[in-house]
Image (cartoon, rainbow, N blue to C red; front, top):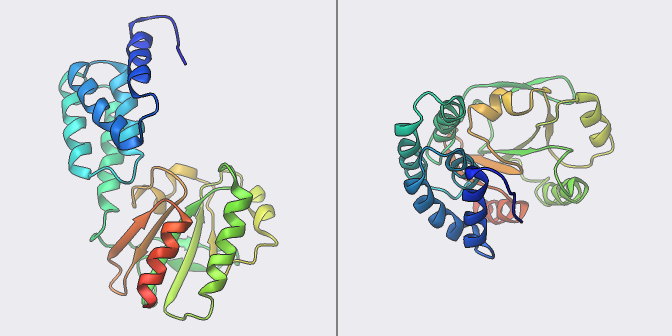
Length: 232
């Protein structure tokens, strides 16, 4: 679709036309060229956030390199500085990094430190009731956890990014998932969200018995594949 108006609109129109029908990786390649050409544009900031920061598959070094290109021309832009901070947080949540010591309160009102569980594997699953197809997600998640309910080596914690806790509580009141549920109502400002660099949902993070991150991804299908590897 086209948005008529100023030069920024025209830049985005040209970009959209160029990447029409491309997959995300291909769009990111085109966006890299675009950002190098127009680093001072608002469109460059948007594309950095949308196609680099929010995509789990983007190498952190590429994100930092692209940010550096934009920051040279927009060093004090508040959106650029905000993205820079989110990149630092994202870096903390990469594979090989430790799960930070953070207390979360569960649906049953007890506290768990996600960086100090006694499980062989800790699985954090980030979601929200406002996600598209949230009902399918929670049903599929419940079935997935049921498959592993007898495995005492796993600690699964579902962390919701809902702002209204009462809606979250109502949504999961009949939930049958074999996991701990947590929601603090802070959405993207929640500590386990910020400190693990969560920029999109759903997202899962898996840590080993030493609380080092060994896998992360964005779908229940990928989570199931990772769980199957762990129990082989």
